[in-house]
Length: 265
Ligand code: 13P
Image 1 (cartoon, rainbow, N blue to C red):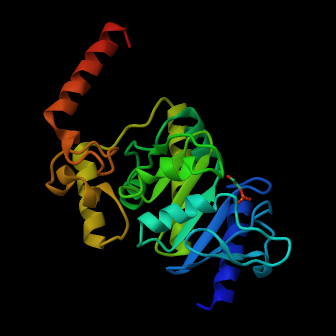
Image 2 (image 1 turned 45 degrees about the horizontal axis):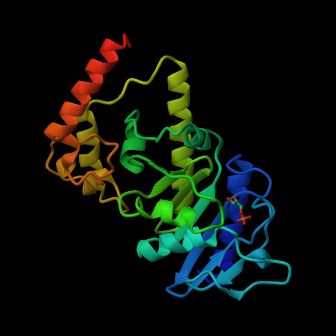
């Protein structure tokens, strides 16, 4: 793809996230890696639904402007995008949006970790919540950083969602899947609560994902328990280092059950 074609694709994806209600007004931002020191990104303060290629800015690996047309400055969240590229060399595109359901979960402090449908388990794994940070500061990159090696999408507490992948289309699809999953989780909670897939059903889905050879970070490939075919809590995403099915977690689950029973829940 030429640089101009990538700029056009950024505009198309911007229109899509706007038209699908994943951003309101001037919210959200998108970036694409061209090479180790050149990145294209959306400008700050414009509606992502009405961009043309002339809007798109070019920055270096530190987020400093290489080229921007008059009246345009790189996104105020460029530091967050750059941290993803720095710590995940496999990532070629980053999408940040405020989708209604996913952002509601991010505001309520509920991560998207319940295994409720095969596609979400296979494609997304689970989506944790990075601690709140003030937009445009280093606080968000710092908060997101600890999840980058284990996940391909994170919620940003009281803010929105971030997805990243090996192409812009895949990063966008990840955002779309996470919002659909958040919507299903919300609706099923309204209907009395989802019936979660069992450990063995989750393990079979992990196996399918491995057979497909899907790229990215996922508990199926990262969680030592899941890889060994042992129960994994799914929600660890791999970051537990194998302790999610350990005696400790069983003990904690048992204590939690007893406390809830004592409280009459
Ligand atoms: P920018 O317009 O600066 O990219 O910011 C939009 C946004 O959503 C901040 O979180």
